[in-house]
Length: 113
Image 1 (tube, rainbow, N blue to C red):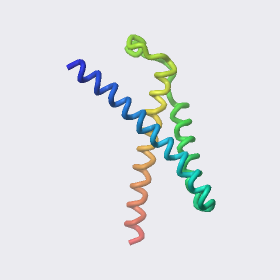
Image 2: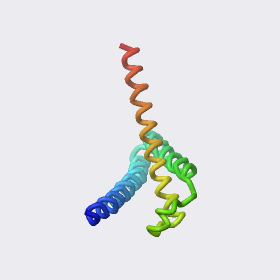
Image 3: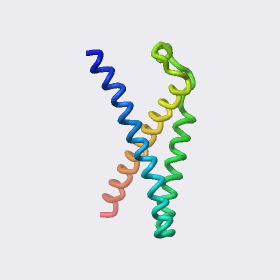
């Protein structure tokens, strides 16, 4: 049972890192492609990339620097713990932004119709 839980924890972290890398690569390649083909459209993509960078910086700024005892026992350094906290904060902020956007969009569609 411990092996399954250990794999699920490590596997989930590995999948999250892979998805983060894919998102970063996609957010870099798309603006470069748009810049080469149509500069007017690339402004929107560049604003999206800038927004993502700001979101990650906010998540990193909100990440705590104190490492709990259980993390120290597992060999997690303060830098690693702060990066994990930054990723979690970034995800939470993104989820809140999307939820607010969806609610506002629904309300505006109801009011317009």
